[in-house]
Image (cartoon, rainbow, N blue to C red; front, side, top):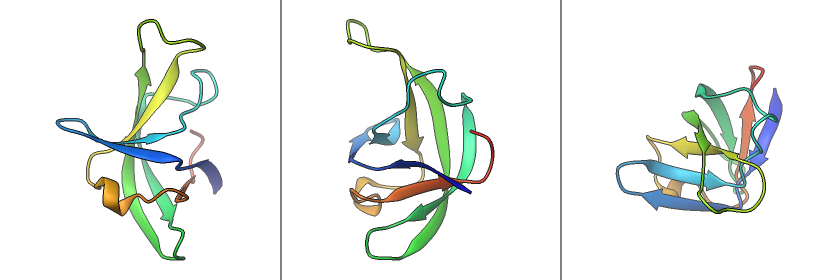
Length: 91
């Protein structure tokens, strides 16, 4: 397994789910897709959940296009800052 990212912030977006940041630049991940990931929370607990990766294009935003990372089944409260997201496939 490899660490995909450590959550710095989570945004609950109605109709979209819980979007976590930071997100890697397009080209640094294989996507789009949905991946089963392991979560390692700051309190030491662990969980599994599907992570949806999609290309995020923000008009007028500086820098490269980014991958959006979203949990459809988890709330913002279930994804505290500092949570590590681990993946076993080549993402």
